[in-house]
Image 1 (spheres, one colour):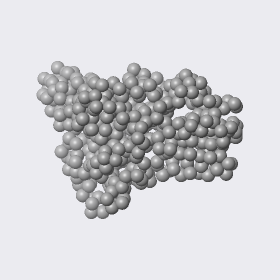
Image 2 (cartoon, rainbow, N blue to C red):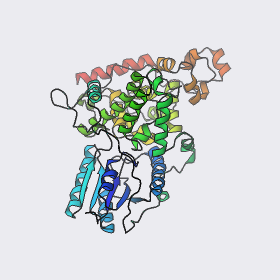
Image 3 (cartoon, rainbow, N blue to C red):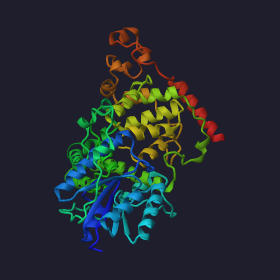
Image 4 (tube, helix red, strand yellow):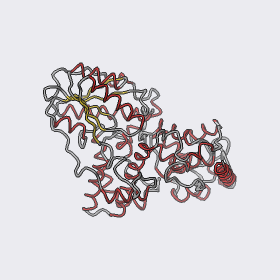
Length: 479
């Protein structure tokens, strides 16, 4: 079938290096057409912040392809319709893609495969997203893992399924008939309100080159401190690779290889292993996505379907806007809005506050994060929210309720992070920064803080909210 062009259908794998679908198509010796399909009806269509990232990632990919004599075809609409039309347009004989793992996505890909087969077009799928497929690693009893720690131990011992990452193609032969392509600007992926994303370009460099630069910088400077400082939002010592991984601008195998190379070159092995355990959490999340249909909306533990959630829209809005009256919570929510990202420790704090202090459904938090995170990932986002809510596999016990005051004092000890994002309370001394309602009047006056006017009082009282949450959990257990 070398005389007929092959199509590479890109999804969350926007890179040239270590892209098994692209490598497979190029190895055929046939001309290759590379297409990205934007389908807003797809089960995991990107939210607002991710659309911004997608726009810039696609632009970077197109430029990288141009450097090796290729181009990126952009089409909008149903993937099945687009692929069948594109295949007919250029006379394609095969389509290659890297696999997806949500049951709804698998069903779509299966239908597309059958449709193309009826037209005499071959399809080949690959693992381009994970170190190990969700069905590969088994417990001693032969089932899938439901607890992270033994999963990580097993994955660490087994290692990646592929022995070595793949190099990018040096040149890609083009089909004789050049496919028609949409203009990226016509998709209007970047926000119409520039004030929302105006800081994004100063913080992020979407694309494969940006991912490689970010990973190399982290491994050369910060990985040895990661174990000690990863919970400190005031210190910029995390990798910030999550959006690059979410869009497949770097593969987990590349991260695995480069991290082990850093260890060989003197990086702290224990600290690097802690970093790799976060890559393993992503793998575990995809295992859950594969095995539990509706991970982003249906609790893995059925008992939580009867949990007595509240429906207070005013409290939900206050949480989304960073106006809860708890400075560390508000700092996290404002960082999310301004940068499209939030430090992982603070993600846990704000998520716990939503589901336990406010008793609002975790699904609401999952949806908000999906729309505002540049790293919104179908597996990690949902699995992490279920973990915090206590309803997921290997979830944090529901009675583990983060105290937002002590969390802020412990992990932002000098208040630098809180003061950056909540300037209304920045003049308070550290002793009262995370609990401004306790500050004596002389301190609030000096700091210019007037609760209820220029900064809200606390939405809930922590001790009372904790008791209320535990009572709700007991109600659920009895049900």
